[in-house]
Image (cartoon, rainbow, N blue to C red):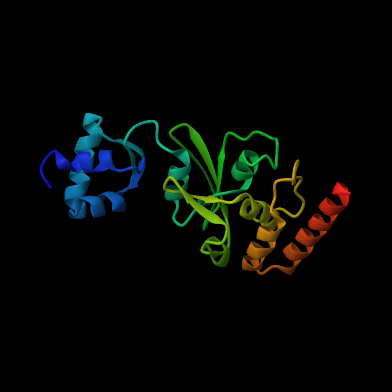
Length: 194
């Protein structure tokens, strides 16, 4: 790569968030050389460092993409997806994500809340969609994630949920209590429609 091609390679990418590993692979450089070059680009304002090991092209980056990269593996879920799909009406400014750790992080003015999921659930791609380099749970997966971690949770509107998809995803949790609660909710929802 030529001298000016390094930054251009990042700017041409449709990704908005880059981990240090992403950049090393993109540039095909050693870690030490990439670290020095990144430091230079950050000082000159060509790139922005939002967290240790995470860089963005500009301040209009995709915050869901960042949530997927702070801890890996991770995917956006819970109240963030439920709110977007109209299943809950409460507004949350935080971005909620599933990961292998439970943490609250503030990064570039945005609060990210990570909730720990067991590896068998976290690493299963059922109901996880890749959108704009972000891993995002479908509304059915987010519904199950919330119920998995919260025994009693109130949903404002379940009319948009695809119960067939819910029951397809449900076995990944391997939890009889969760299955029982989901079946009860489905039965109650059906009765409310009559």
